[in-house]
Image (cartoon, rainbow, N blue to C red; front, side, top):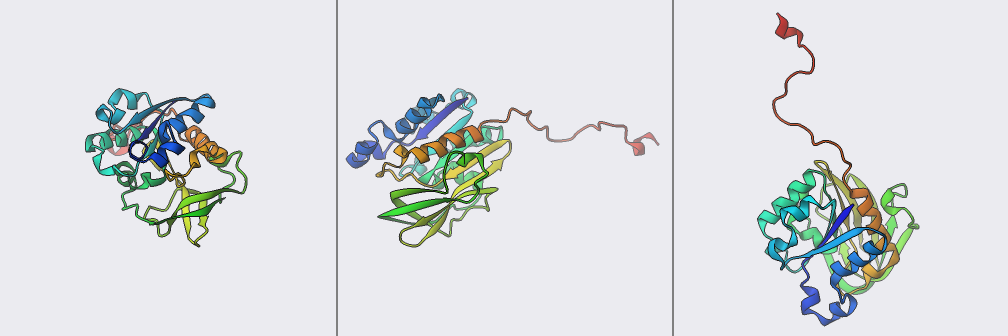
Length: 241
């Protein structure tokens, strides 16, 4: 299995506080714990040619992990379309935190993907609401993060195929923070936590969820469906008259 971690990599360049938490970038932090678990993981960033997502990279990628925030608008439409087609063809997609506003997630969801938000150093408790799901294998009843950015309902997304986590925040809001979808042959998981100034991706439970999600989202290996006008498999009686 080959995983590509995509990150716009702008906060890390411009904000010393973010650089202190993620000296190798958010993409580097995720690559490290996936690699430590034996996953073949590479990174790509916005400022690389073709955003690091040329056709060969995507064709070789089983699961794409996406983190973006400041520069959603700078992602070229042809790259979005390229990723979109790969998801329909079976590539898994893990969308993290503020990636909810990315062009690719909004294209796949078909909605605004808007929400409430607040930065107040508040506690987040992510409750597991589907304990049978493989994404929460090895996770207890909840994950507690001492500091996170708040995301609150209403979250303008389609009803998830599966709801895995619901978050509660210290200020009182709740949020659908772990959602799965299927589009074409591809599987998608949106996972909410991961504000850039907090060490969320150093949390062992968060790392476990992402590792589980990568395994869950990998391609099933089935043949691509055939579309369009089809010849009958059996003789049609009406045609024999």
